[in-house]
Image (cartoon, rainbow, N blue to C red; front, side, top):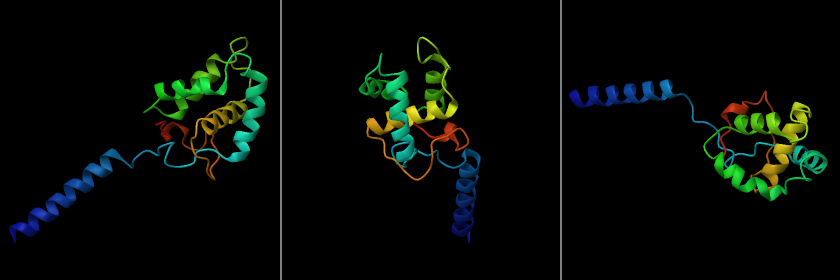
Length: 127
């Protein structure tokens, strides 16, 4: 009887811990977090607003520095500082498309879900 009680106590404890911690966060390298259309459109905006100062491969070490952080932080940083001569001058959607292009060019997988503020951007973690 005590083995059965211990078993259920462990199940309840484990379940309680999972409920307290919540579900695991989605990882940007396990699930496609942008669509191919976003990446394609992002290429246009990248060429117009970013390419004068940055090659797209410039972002490989940037993404490494953001490892473990959400894409929301990357988006906020880019939106608040780029383009250097006119930060915040693009629309939210244009910045998202640029990030989709950067992710695409740095071998992050595409998927069916559009990268966007309304798609739990703060839960998408960069690896």
